[in-house]
Length: 341
Image 1 (cartoon, rainbow, N blue to C red):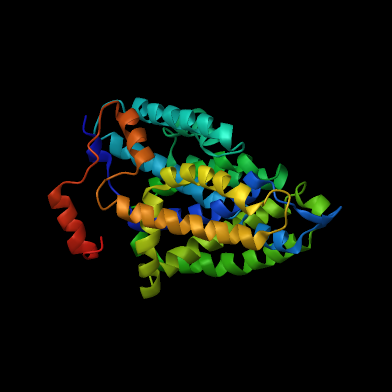
Image 2: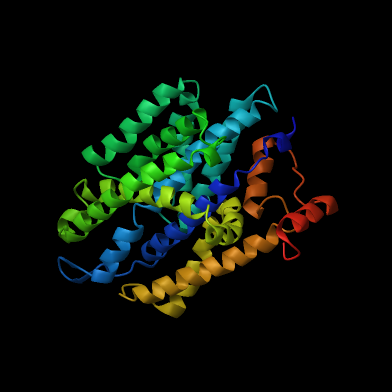
């Protein structure tokens, strides 16, 4: 069994994962610090509502979709390393659940534990289904659930299945050749997302969390963000941003977990609890992103995986996986990215 045979990165998706991580951070800060949502009973704070329309329900679906895609991708590559790939993947999900259970103590409502449970209960058994069945089930879950029941964690099964189906249809293998398809989806999703976001912004606060407007608007926003980011990363400016975002995406687990102690440490100094200081929230998010971007960039100069990613991989393969880059590997990085890398 060689765990390195399952090690391969899709750089564009790593960068998208990094963007999603940044968006989730803004939402997590508000939730962890329990900031004030209304200026008076029934009247939502305008800045709070604007951030809700821009961030909440937009980046979590992207992260969930990419998790489902990575799940299927890992299963395929694990099958090349061992004759029991499903056992390896089950162990991987159980390890993620343990991390999520510990993290839940400090951040109730975190995503890792539900991800692990849905992965074990739905995604792992569904891996044997034909790809068209996966796609249909994913569409029903991702579209039917928000319309009938609302959003939140109820979206996870459908998004996982959609991500898994996308990988089975070869999206991860030929993403670079699908430029025109990405353009078409973005051209359709962007105006729909803007219209849905404006509709969501006008919904009274008391009705915002009970209907299907917010989750539907969130999904449309997520689709517009996803395709828009993919197009932006193909520009010269986007390539510069990708240099920053890709390391963050490669270390998504470490950065997601480490954000919680950073938020909890900063909150007593910033006094965000029960406040409407959303400008301070954005400043804290920017500071954490800057720290994590710098940390991820320099860590990956010396190591293959982030700290928690390495532990997770060791448990997944049930062996000590080499992490430190060899001198030759570091030299290749220097040639590819310049002396700063």
